[in-house]
Image 1 (cartoon, one colour):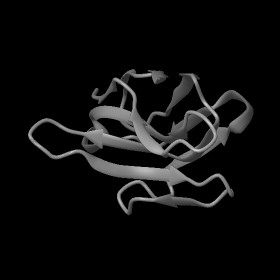
Image 2 (tube, one colour):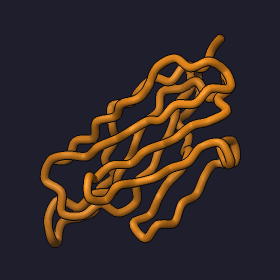
Image 3 (tube, helix red, strand yellow):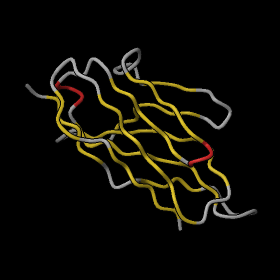
Length: 121
């Protein structure tokens, strides 16, 4: 089994910055795409950003230029640096990693438990 553990959530003032971390553990053979999603109250979960194993990154329009995704393949970890935060960024943030547990296994998208980010003065 693969487990994802997120950290770095909390309260931030508008205009502030913070960084989320997500580390995968367990039986891992390979991790491909890593990404972040978020869900605000009353809304569906939405994609925020992703990073491929080859180093390509892509961002949702709402966060482009403000958020930066990065990864450390040796640590099976993905990070989300957030700047210029505004109240609309308030949400539960989830990491997702496409992992293969052993050679020949199927690649499955695993989710973290989520971490709350609140942007408020």
